[in-house]
Image 1: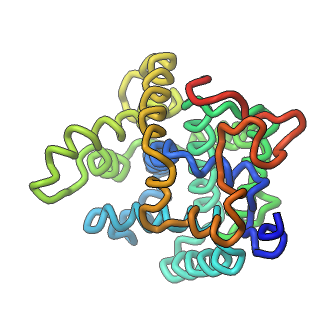
Image 2: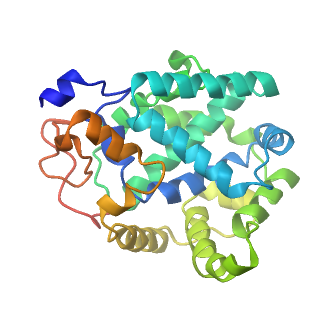
Length: 291
């Protein structure tokens, strides 16, 4: 473990829940769920509509978001702090740095990552789920929030959503985001792939939303058990792609972190015992599909 002691582990490091959880491919579904949920805040989504080019460059926007999350999760402390500074600068320049709106975006993202991960079969204990939420107060600081004002537990996150729900609505901007998420613009040659793959994945992400979100979008909530079954099946299919191949796709944050810290820092949310002692007793248990 000399490499881990000598090199910069970044903001979270291999002993964190974040390090293990964010390595799983189900995080892509979780990211889409976050977009569905974030669109329900009328003021926040209005800012996106005014200041974002997501309709002209949808894939670039998604990849830049993934790169930011990957840098915070696996990059050096210097790289993560620099990425946060760039985001804060953009927020200030576009005047979308209202703490209330930043808190909504942060909480929707954190809740989506945690909810989808647990429902997909990653067996996080309640204590580790709380630890994950608490770890992401660090992420909140990097986008310009006071960590003391950010929920630090699953219960705190739930209380936040209870408080903000009266402010949510599926207005015209949310409908624009909905149309985009269901049918993003692609070149003609990619239309079959969009219809065969993308629409199923984004529909699954939508189905994992909480019941109040389904009500706001005006669609009946699907059976939770059926959604969980589909999510576990889809996640396990994605996990069939070897990690060494998935992680070497751009932007390659995990391989670079392992090069920096040593191969023993390889994240694995299903390892038993865990690669590092996340809790006592270990709570990253058994294997995939244990919903």
